[in-house]
Image (cartoon, rainbow, N blue to C red; front, side, top):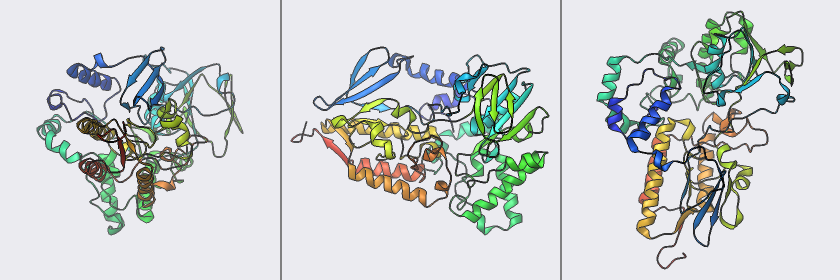
Length: 479
């Protein structure tokens, strides 16, 4: 799943040690790709892009970096990542804390020794759920501050079975081709089971099998889980039953059961021993709905009813998702239009790759594309292939620029919204909607139609000569 498809030799040579490999393995894999393709010569490391401005008279972008360099380019491709800008919460006194402050998205490369320390974790999303069991293994005392419980499924991580790995390697080409056209961008079962067709006993057997497999297997096999509230409620009940069986204290178990959003409408978290961590005597859960944080002070965190003295505060408070990395760059298109201003009332794009008013600017896994809803590596590859083909087509046509037309952009945004509205996704105050960032417009940003249908649509647009896009500079047309 989370590996590239364009190096079949590497598929055979590389062996993943676990289902979900530890962080150090990922850079080794990426460096191997860089070595295979000699990529470093084309990369500027330790360089931040501060602005990009389109010069309409030259049909060129001027890109300024933080080291004072100005580059000119005909095309700019923003591959800045959907989850790359950490979100720091606006908590009074946050800068006053005298101990160590960490963020799960900015973890020290050298690691951190929590041995014997009093540790606070703020947040119970994905990064918290992954890190809390490890922190608890070292800390003298761990206090977790939870505002919103999240639905969580077993990661079922562990060493890969050599027999299974050999079988997978033997069928990599056909598996990858199949994954290109599934909803999830993976080869897990897709929509083969209708929950409401099963009685309680049969459903429990099916769900237990899904839980035993973990990950995507708990979401994609069902046809009605994300569209039928009753079907979703049955999965939620099963999930809560599992939590109660794993957490000894009934009150803590109930706090850990997510109730404010349907199952799967926020990105599902995957756990390895997370719920059992709360059975440890030195681990405590604080419900911020009843006792909110009032301030951070030099010695710790003060809530409405207690003071928590701590040595370390870890913010597991997520990201400015989908748009954060783009709006932090001063991107200026035609007639002085700034992308940040255009998106101030909600993201708008065509196919998630092009924005009206920004010629020759492409976004990889941008708002309006499947991106974070699926296997993101498959999403990235589809976008890069499509953008590459588009640029090649422009060269063949002798065209100067391409951008989304306002009408086509509006139509695509309406389609993205209608597709989301046909599901339960909008019922959650999720980062899919920007709800975790104060002041951010509430718009459902990703496309929930799935990779396969999205790919077919993009391919048809290309085959038909890019309808919905404004192409300039053809012979006889404007330069």
